[in-house]
Image (tube, rainbow over the protein chains, first blue to last red):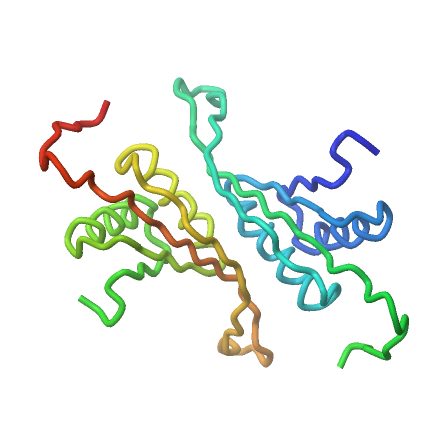
Length: 109
Length: 109
């Protein structure tokens, strides 16, 4: 439960993989906050995953903080200089369940 | 040059094109705020452009607000359903010039 259970690293898989990761994190760990981290082209995937999650699956998801940054990557084989790559971190929070009326019949429209 | 002088739409060009756009907007319009808008894969380009600008060119640039969203695109030729595409808006602000000493010789360190 401690090695950053609520951080999802977004890579080259399709966005739906990470959507599932977000949903699982929120439900399994009963977390209030989940953070997505991505770099390079995966930044778009991270944004896609968040948007799909909150429009289709978790309606009461809200986007907390979004930060961008730069990381230095070691040079690839055959190259001599380090590359800079952009990063993004998106923190998601889920509204608390309303204390009353457990089932307000809010099925998807 | 356009109806929203301080908005830069990021598309498929290399990030340096938009870096130049940011620098130009801040200097020509003497703007305090410039907003980058991008969608789809250009989201990464927008983040790259911001990161390059603030690390290499405008050291006192700060990132104001970052918002993400979804836009519905009309169906492409030969397709029947609309596509959703993720969007990002990044607002940049530049620290005020110190009011005294117009030329403090603050060349890049």
